[in-house]
Length: 110
Image (cartoon, rainbow, N blue to C red; front, side, top):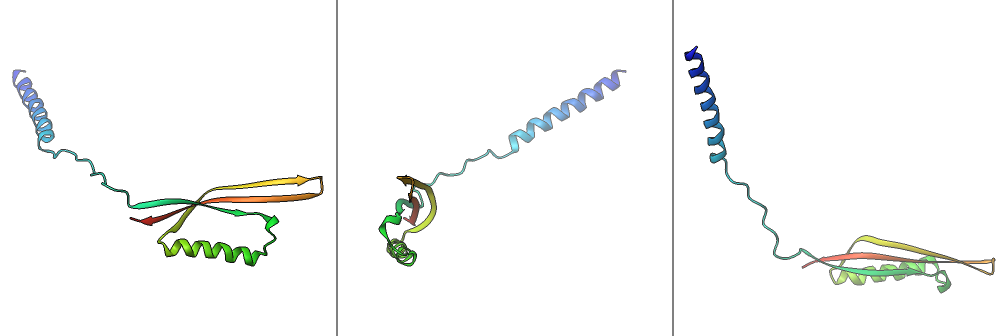
């Protein structure tokens, strides 16, 4: 019976030593290095649509294309629209107007 206890004790001691040794041998975890600077500059631009301007769809599209191309020449590229807001107004029960404003985020590399 003493021989069984001795072997059990040696086996248990071996498992404890192996477990502790594996913890000492494993390399420490390292965190990723933070970037010193951000990669992009961001800018938010407001595009508005008012039907009271009496522009045709083609003229309005040309106006927006011109704005987008101006920003593209300076290195800005559109990323996402942040907010679309439409305001509907009915005047005197007969005339309905809708104003739309869109905020678009642009970015360019630093």
